[in-house]
Amino acid sequence: MSHFFNKMKQGVTDVSKKAQNTVEAATLKIQITSKEKEIDKNYSAIGRIIHQSVARKESTIPIADIQKFQKIILNLEQEMELMQRKIQQIQSQKECGCGKMLPADATYCPFCGQQFHVVKVRTVPTSGQGSSSNTQHVNSSRHCTQCGSSVMSTDHFCKTCGHQL
Ligand SMILES: [Zn+2]
Ligand SMILES: [Zn+2]
Image (cartoon, rainbow, N blue to C red; front, side, top):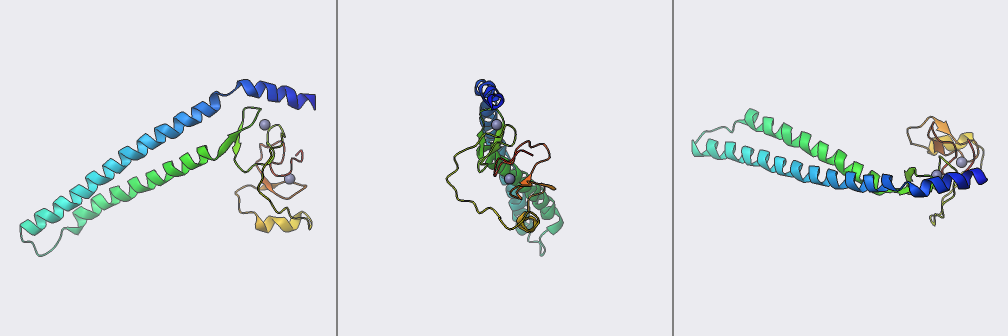
């Protein structure tokens, strides 16, 4: 047990990771803003094409030209979505005493086994270990032998029940 406390003490001094994440989230937000501006530029380009086409009294709108800009917009929107998801991921993490970043809903640290006081009530499958696998949709092939929760291959402890893996 003293092994855990030593590890926790080490972790307390390692606060740089959290600061790093804050910086990363801020950087991503700036990148998202610049993507929004790029999207606006492409919308303007589409507007200009339509405007010129109408001004020239053309009977057809140059769809191919518009699609070119539309494709760029869709790509930018996809990139923005990925960045937003990454920010959510960063912000939904909590830091363990051992210095590792964990998902906010983790009850136990998968690295050092420390327990967190999570208020959320979680239903743990009690009827055997095999039956729980159908409720898991996380992309992990390993499961806790005690509660059946999916665990990362790098985890030393189950983050749901704290069972040593
Ligand atoms: Zn830990
Ligand atoms: Zn477990």
